[in-house]
Length: 135
Ligand code: NI
Image (cartoon, rainbow, N blue to C red):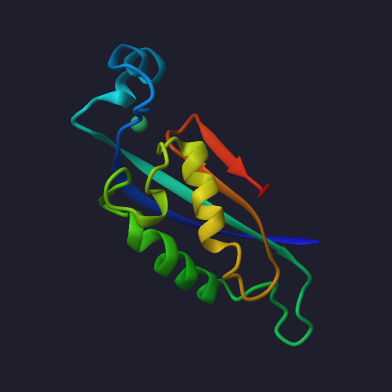
């Protein structure tokens, strides 16, 4: 099995806040990430496609096509946006990196033209990354 990865970056604002918790609980659980006036991260997204090599092209997937699919379905909806209020596929979802990874997976899983979506990785800081491989 071959694994092909495309990396993209985006900058986005968010606030971690669960309306079921009190303001104090939100502050306790999410700390600075619960700031009511938003804050931003420079995210790195990695999309990993697994598959066999196509005999004719020598590719698992054409990375140019994969890039276009990621830009169209994800990056245009998140880059320089507020994930809580502007990104349709994040509506009603607390924008933790775990949830962002799962939502991006759902955005892309049925749009991969060859091979199969294997994993979504989100880097929120240099030291933390989050990986989702489906249900
Ligand atoms: Ni944050």
